[in-house]
Length: 117
Image (cartoon, rainbow, N blue to C red; front, side, top):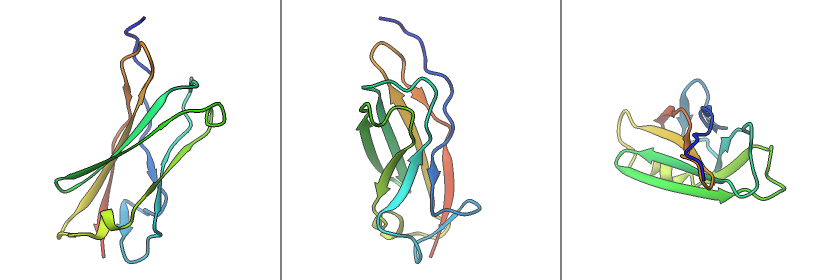
């Protein structure tokens, strides 16, 4: 077992966000959050996506299969997470981690988008 850390990971993408803004009146349900393909992906890696809006957090996870290795991973995010109880100046923050047996989890950079009606 090793305590090696995975290499730095880029931020996820929210496919319907443009210029750092997502509009709840036009997003699909679900809307896609995408974890880019990453170097060294291995069968059994656990990809965990976190979404925080206000004081609420949602977690999505997937264990990589042989069909997933080397490909981007898409998570469907329910649109009501963005619209329910929408406050003025609301934003969404997304990031993900990659966990692998014997290694310290790698964390991505954070994506922050403003939420507008």
